[in-house]
Amino acid sequence: MSSDSEESEGGILVTEKAAKEFRHIVGQKKLPDDTGMRLSVKGGGCSGFEYQIDLEHNPADEFDIESNQHDIRIVVDMKSEFYMAGTTIDFNDSLMERGFTFRNPLASGTCGCGSSFSI
Image (cartoon, rainbow, N blue to C red; front, side, top):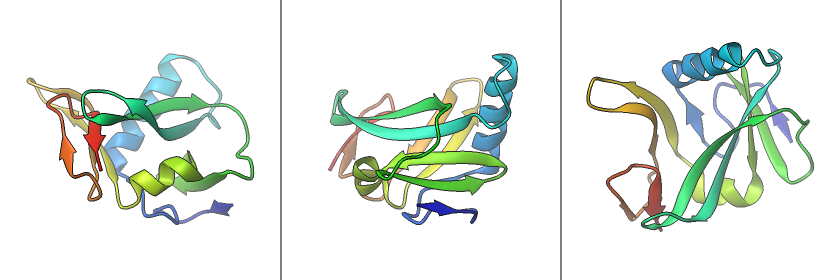
């Protein structure tokens, strides 16, 4: 499933700041420009589920939802999308905290690290 909108069909939004940092990482690693951002949810972490961002080199398959946001390819598997619908992925570059952040309206609780949540 593919979409060229700024937001994926499941409502996962990647901000321009997060997309810029992802493009920076791809450039630092000297990877092809078409390297995508794979978003997923895995069991684990302090609160039960953990977000993951990986570099995606393969085309999406029939179990993936693909979109294009801020000129980067976003790929999320359907199972993870169920847990991430409505999530905004941003990038924080402050002195106290640096990294990708996840604002998930479905999460009933999160831990202090910000990358683990419960539903």
